Length: 70
Image (cartoon, rainbow, N blue to C red; front, top):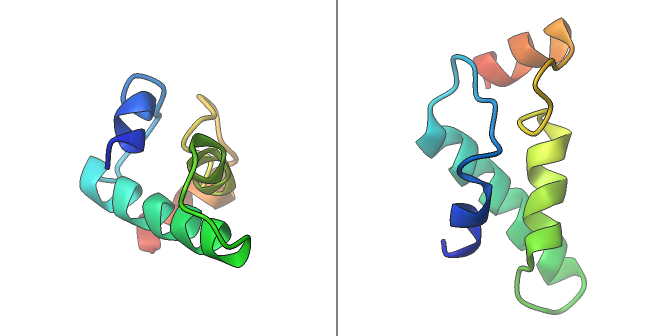
């Protein structure tokens, strides 16, 4: 949860709630870290937020629709 605070001013959420975006990306980051046998690092969360386009101010429209559905 501490790592999520590092992204608070960089996220472009659109219609997605902050709680949902953080929960989903934290899960991705945790899984990625576990695959490497360690605890989550900022880079793991960066991957999660990048996959869903939350770090991009102008993500692809298809990606925006997908993440809002999920």
